[in-house]
Each structure stands twice: as structure tokens, then as C-alpha cells.
Image 1 (cartoon, rainbow, N blue to C red):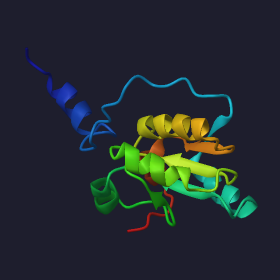
Image 2: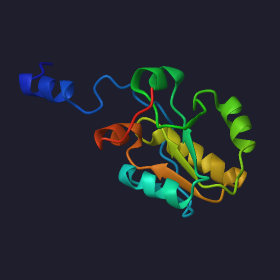
Image 3: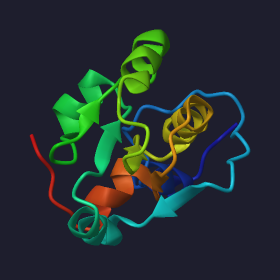
Length: 140
């Protein structure tokens, strides 16, 4: 099978080139109480609700190499039991913004947080990739 040069260029310049693929179960059905928030709306959320928690569920390597949202808590999706134990200790009444690289892992964690009793869960639309693409600040 031959690939055309155009296909190779499209693959190389794909927005996900060089990003670890998220190998996950099928996308969960999100409860109606879980909403999305656009990267550009996060600042307004933090002003209106300064107690909002920001939860990064990417790997430590992803945080180190790409940066993270300022003041985000880090709970690695792939360390599931540790992550669930840590999440269960957070204030379930506070709003939480959850993100990963593109959104898959964050969705799965959001569903579990909902089961734990979190009341106000927001998924960062497009994940950290969308955050950086929209020019938002990145902490290192």
C-alpha cells in the first residue's frame, strides 16, 4: 500500500501529530449535569466562581512537556485508584473544570466524579490542545 505525499503532509501537520493517542473505552454517555466550557470562558468562570477547582488528568510527562493550566490539580487518569481516592477528598460542592489532552479521559473522569456526588462539573471543550490553540496562558 502506497501513501500519497499529500496524505503524508496531512498526517504530519495534523493537530494531533506527536500527541500520545488516548486509548480509552468508548465515550461515555454524559449525564445532563455535566457541561462543557470553552477555553475562552474559563477566566469568566474563575472570576464569577473563584472557588472553582481545575483538574488536569493527563500524565506527568504531558504536564512537564506541554505545560498546564495555572493552579490546576494533577490526578493522572492512568493511576485510577489514586485519582479516585484523591478526587473523593475534594469538596464536591465546588465547581470543577476537568481537562486532558483532547477530552476523552476528562469525560471518563467527569462521569466518575458525577457518581461520587460532584454537583458542578465542567469539561474543557477540546482539552488542553484547544486551550493552547486558543492562546490561553500555560504554566510550566
